[in-house]
Image (tube, rainbow, N blue to C red; front, side, top):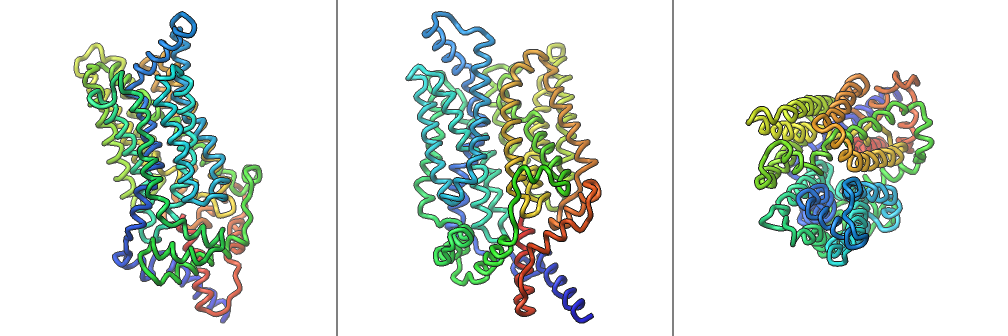
Length: 538
């Protein structure tokens, strides 16, 4: 009975620590936002996620000029203009090959991070950005559309690496009290990158036939800025301590990022994480797919990530100008109207980040996909009858804004959060590899197939995305449990019934993760609380 009482006391203390009742979380104002931390977040995102967002929208404005260059080059080589289907295929490859590069980057990033570290990977990744910028900027002068296509592939590799390395770096250098806020630099800079691509694509700036190559070459500037600042900032202290076993450098990195001299608590927390992880073996992708205990978690991640890309937002970004022109807006005002889409995206992403812990993941996802389905249905109706009513194009544009806002309210960021929450420590690396593969393959499919779908179905093309969003919302309504304020063990237990496995499966793995030899009540509680806190930080 005494042992049981002690165990309950330890669990209560660990639970109190996990729920944020400790002094640091109860008094977040004491957290010091250091200058190195702000610089790392700002310049890290500027040379990484910002470039990803920029390349989502940058090909939109100069599309006609780039196609004209393709056709002109084809005539110079073969003595006749390119056929309509050939030109459409070349442009589709230009747009979609970005995702193939992203897939390659996502597959190699784990090796780069292991060898170069988090900061080192970000620095080396800038080489890809600079090479891509040079190839796309000089492609017209060299008379080679292949250089532009290859440049899009290389910047895709850059984005695939950045979207994994940057969140990992920011999460490991941030105090737990503001880790979410620092992590938001990633998503906010994606939105800012999209908006910058729209602004620089205006006819008054770089959206001209004589300047579009500079528009594509602009992406070298953020990469160079990151190269100038990031080398003077520390590497991730957790990487230095857990993988390099360099406690001296890790201590200095913690001191710089946290803005204080005494980092004993943070060092001990990382040591506790290291001891816990040494008792866990990361499973392979094959083992993850064969494990019945996580079968529906895997299915949920695959469906959610597929819907994330196939819901139609990338089609909106890649072809916004064409959609607005077809909706009846004068071509002279289309670039200026497009600017509002970037503003709406940024605002919706910020609002979602502010309410996600209050509303929950599941309601935001279901609402987002449902609202997108409704908006696509209305957009199809308005585009069909736009020639009969003079004010119908304005309703079409309102639907486009509604699609963007609905996406960013939930489906735009939560799938990545769910991938980390639905799996315990040993399953998570393989789960992220599966999620990344689905993400970039689906991105490629949309960029490659949408022009042909649009030609075949005309105004009914968006009905395809309506079906995807509706099916995604129905699936999540019946399958996905709420994960807000739940431990990974509790989330696994939520799936135990549908997976037809015993509820004790996650408990056994949790026992392995927490298997430490108690020396004293204080040491035991501190270790257990630290490990539980490490798990819940995901």
